[in-house]
Length: 115
Length: 262
Image (cartoon, rainbow over all chains, first blue to last red; front, side, top):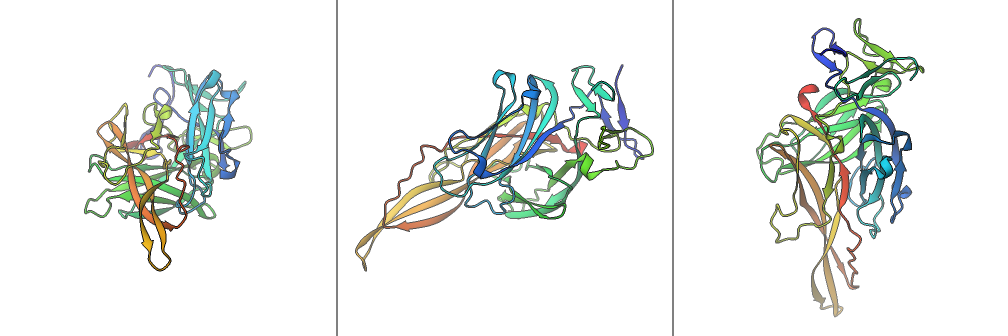
């Protein structure tokens, strides 16, 4: 490694961080997505213009806080880049379902990488 | 950042440490019991980011799905799992790995004597060289799953609705973060009979529930759409079974290397 940083675990000497190898994910946003906040037709759209041109990573847990999954509509999560703006779309799998809508939990990371 | 600490990968120019940016760190792992339906209780301050290992090269129809997450107390969480074909004698040896916010779980850092500890201007810890930062195996942050709206019927071959994703590495010793279930219910007309007491025709429907099970095979992640359980509905009124708005579910997946998070 000509330039950079490596750090080792105290005591064991295990290499834990290498700036030439890592892709640390930085926490951009996290929030509860309530099922009722998601439009049945258009879904819920979240834009991150501050990260235009950057590649984000998204994890989405659903159902969140519902316990049993049975009887709940399930949310889908998609990340796209219209005009290079990271855009997350949350939607339901079946817009005609009359079953209760599940909530979810969204965590968004900045990968540091460009598109 | 005008003053502070930032580190870039010299090869990719990607920022890998920044004193102003919050991160998640590895908190530990928990065994997932080999039961058909099971749960794991975990400790984490703030929302836990959960990865779980998947059956690898075991059997085509063996898989795992994370089916829910709920808070069960202060800094305590319960993750729910469904294991397809669990209990068939195969020891799946699956584990759950938890990541949590560094600034919440280690507000004063790990207590290292030597190394690097970074804080932002608010005093929150943003990097600790003694902890394992959340990082993915390869650049899998772009991986998107498509869970088909189509669901198996009774006579379909079991693997007809599987979705296979080629990954840029072998899936042995990997864990995934993937929680979408895809289409939940599928209503099918099952039959009719005449109730001789009332003379009415009774229509029977089968409400079939589905689950998306994950497994690994060499460099492939397989998502199996499996028929989970059915409940029966009897009605004297015809049901309009409108499936026109059911659509494929797009979801995200991330993969970590278990050897980096023992």
